[in-house]
Length: 25
Image 1: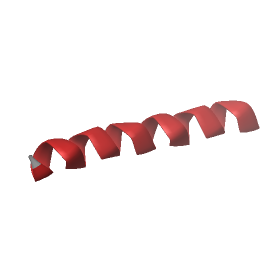
Image 2 (image 1 turned 180 degrees about the horizontal axis):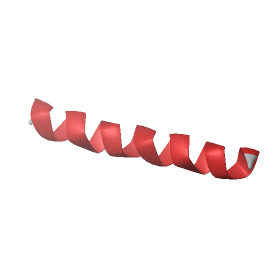
Image 3 (image 1 turned 90 degrees about the vertical axis):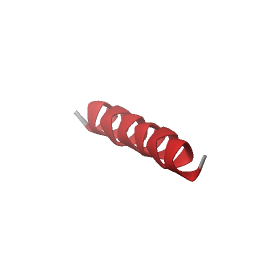
């Protein structure tokens, strides 16, 4: 389950970056 947890955290991190990037623009 650790792998799944890592995938979820990484996905959330990427999504947050895209969201913040959109706001900065």
